[in-house]
Image 1: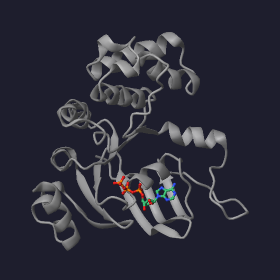
Image 2: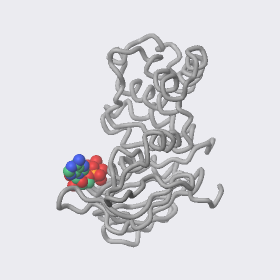
Image 3: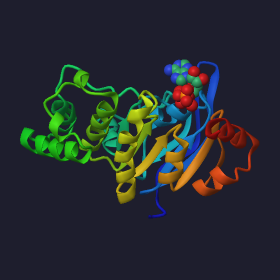
Image 4: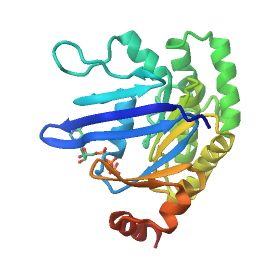
Length: 257
Ligand SMILES: Nc1ncnc2c1ncn2[C@@H]1O[C@H](COP(=O)(O)OP(=O)(O)OP(=O)(O)O)[C@@H](O)[C@H]1O
């Protein structure tokens, strides 16, 4: 693993109205590192990922992705992407898998996967389709290419969501509670896909999860979040076996018992 940070938050602040979510927040992720973020509801975990995807702006500080600034502050003092071109370029580094899949219901599985690479990356239909077939094979859904999302189980939909994110060939994969909308018996088939990707360590992965055993198994580092701060972080074996902070202990006890 290189020591070069691929994601860097420096003194970032983020508010929703009068509510401060991040205040002077610092955080970085190294290239090919797999980092899990765990913590109570409302602590800012999803907001962190949404800021990285440029789905949310920030109110102060800097964020660098792959050595380039994600947001620019023009003369009027509000943070915006420098241009649509810049926004697309920065999003190229990032793939996100959402809790509620966000698939297009009127498109086949294959089309869900080929649409963005063709539109955004300019891939030819045949290239995009070949790529989609390989990815469907990877997530174990080669036989579902022509199905529609509504004909799939939740676990299958989420595996399509993963294939769709990978189709853009991101260097960073963001996973936002990707199993929390699934029935318990469907969780493992989705986690297995991520386990396999993690084994290869081909991507930087930042995952928000409530699956503690999974976080422990796949992560290089676990960050425990509370109220927009990293309260404790470290190797999973340290955080899970001997957390130092009371808040981490209480949270893990509630989840693991
Ligand atoms: N668009 C928004 N407008 C106003 N407040 C928001 C918005 N998005 C999030 N918040 C608030 O910001 C805080 C952090 O939300 P966030 O979704 O990041 O938390 P979380 O840690 O991911 O929680 P959960 O585990 O429940 O998903 C919450 O108090 C939430 O209500």
